[in-house]
Image (tube, rainbow, N blue to C red; front, side):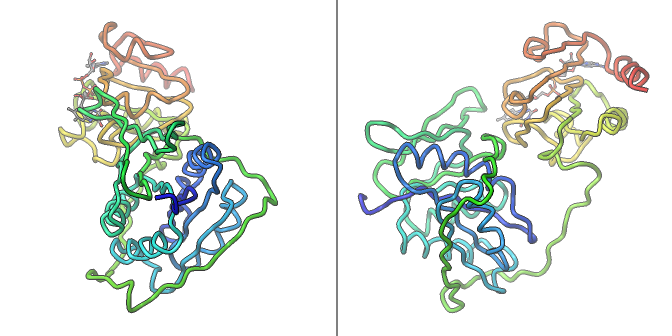
Length: 328
Ligand SMILES: Cc1cc2nc3c(=O)[nH]c(=O)nc-3n(C[C@H](O)[C@H](O)[C@H](O)COP(=O)(O)OP(=O)(O)OC[C@H]3O[C@@H](n4cnc5c(N)ncnc54)[C@H](O)[C@@H]3O)c2cc1C
């Protein structure tokens, strides 16, 4: 196990765009690398991805491995996992962080199986245990009622997928120097059982939640699917996006991709307006990092009213129109 050195992060690229999760992993990875006195390494896999390498260095990577080929243009689990497995066997990283995005969740699991090591999925915090240098990965469990810290004592690398938005993005240090090493794609070895047919983007009807600085979220208290149109008005007025708790998603009032919480998205906007949401722990798991929380609720004793910076007691169908009127 002593042969395994350095902290790796997987810099996800999808449809020609570098995912901002790469910068979050660089923040988390830098803390681990410094605690161990090892290098922070970023891994890029795809087509024409080497153009992101210097940017990763300027955000904290000491070294970037790049595997690029036309055949890697479209993401396929098994091909990418085979590339990562070869990289791991060749360079032997100590820790390996991937983003808990759709791609990262699938890729980390498959790679961990191919490599034969352990993976903590969907962690929200990672630290190095001072006594033995092990990776301690913490994640919510039992429906968010407990935080479990998971270790992988007997195999390397210790792998972990880390929830987006769990760490701040690493700042840019312009002109920072680092090393870039190419790694060959091997058509005969990096094969797939799956054929890529098409990438179909879901229709966007608003801002991406991950990027929104203002989020107006609705819960069961919205009462009906049409109620979200009122929330959308407020969101549009504030330049923000609409989201939801699980209750309206389960009721079919709004699509799952808007769900915030333990089994939905984690967000960190500057302003989170929770309308008709009680504030159960599973919902809070996805939004408690927001800078300012405003809650609109009929029930002054709802848990969200206690964590909100501004708690508005009232019917959302009266409060929101009055907010819109004031904003005019
Ligand atoms: C394993 C597991 C995972 C889960 N994952 C998630 C998750 O990812 N995200 C999530 O959100 N939940 C999740 N849940 C569900 C969670 O426990 C709650 O059931 C859910 O968050 C409740 O949604 P809500 O607050 O909208 O509804 P409720 O708890 O029913 O609250 C509705 C609130 O609306 C208020 N209200 C009613 N009418 C009005 C009105 N006209 N104006 C103002 N206020 C009004 C009420 O006073 C009440 O406080 C999970 C549960 C489990 C067990």
